[in-house]
Amino acid sequence: MGKRIRTRRRGKGSRTYRSPSHRHHGKVAHPPYEDEEGNVTKILRNPGRSATLAKVSFPSGTVLMIAPEGLQEGQTVTIGKTIIDRGNTLPVGDIPESTLIFNVESMPGDGGKFARTAGSSAVVISHGRETVVQLPSGKYKNLNPRCRASIGVVSAGGVTERPFAKAGKKFHVYQSKAKRARRVSGVAMNPVNHPHGGGAHQHVGKPSTVSANAPPGRKVGRLSPKKKKKGRR
Image (cartoon, rainbow, N blue to C red):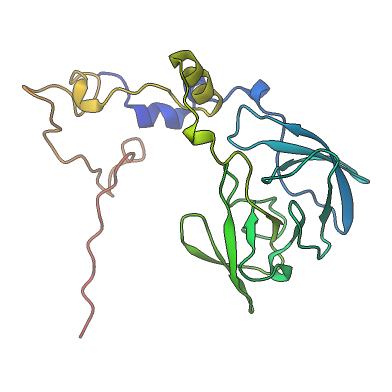
């Protein structure tokens, strides 16, 4: 029968592809507070994330937030107040155009979904019935003006340029992110271990895409491209 391919094993969620819980400080999201002012008590390095975190103390409680570039311990941040300053959180409808933001909500109150990785940021483009935001991918997204976001750029922007120096360090970093540091290509395997394995030389030997009609267990990897429908002239 052979063993299951990598994408199938990753989807199952075994220990190899599971980030250790002790390397995460907790849930990171916009707190459900309104019109409050907090104090940054500590800047934390989270091995399970690329960005650093900020521990902020509010009158209603202490929360973890993604730290922007330049945030320092002892600094004051606000939530809900219309103050355009680094680290402050407010609705995107109240943020001026061309402002850099991060941890943008897709729906009001979900805690933040977009632009959360190190060095990333989105840009407010225009306002209207909906607020248009350009995401780090370049895609334009129409959002509810009540969706919240933080001002600034996510910290640790140069983390991807830092060399690992040793293979062991790369192993532990990738393990914290639920990834494998070393991968073997399918064409280098035996046919019993991967559909692309075997042969006189390294080549796939058959279409590497997966049919759109494949069952759920096989519908992984590169899906077959869809045919474009010709419009009427």
